[in-house]
Amino acid sequence: MSNTSEVENLKREFRVHGAKTVQELLSALLIWLFGILVFIPISASLGSNVELVCTLLILVSFTVLISRTMGNLKCLIDAFAFLPAKKYMTKRGWNYKNATIVSKQILYLVFAVILYLLYLPFLVRIHPAVSGIALIFVIVFVFFLAVRALRASGAAITSWLNS
Image 1 (spheres, rainbow, N blue to C red):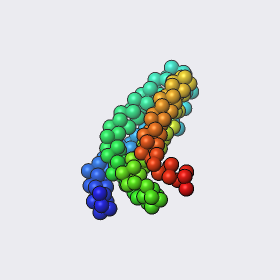
Image 2: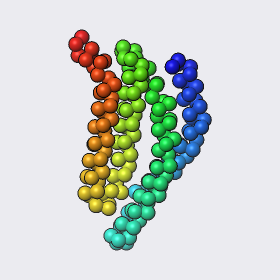
Image 3: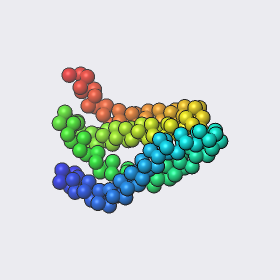
Image 4: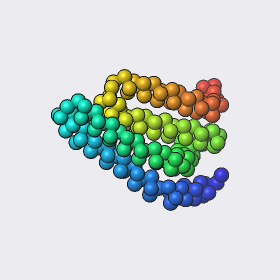
């Protein structure tokens, strides 16, 4: 794929998915901020059952908004992945296809970690073990992303180690 067609693809994806994705992500962020900083501390002063109900309500609304953005966000990440691939990896002699795969996997990894960190305050308030179980799922997901990235970058890594 040429550089201009990739830039055009990125522009098209931003036109199609950008505004809605940003709007829903900002709405989810506002729900998260108000929930974590205002509503849950107020409900904690009213009792543990009220805190749990408030946490669950905010968790569900946050999850609904995040799940509505997942498909659009994946399209945007896939369209954006060529930029770090070209800027950092192909200049160092990586195959373009493998560099794009590794770039996508790294962006997915960053998004998964950020998403876990956003969910962490809710999960800890429900029960500390729930956050541990979620962390195990995130670690397994990150492991599979790393395996996929290493499969794509194996030749580049071995040539770098041999030099």
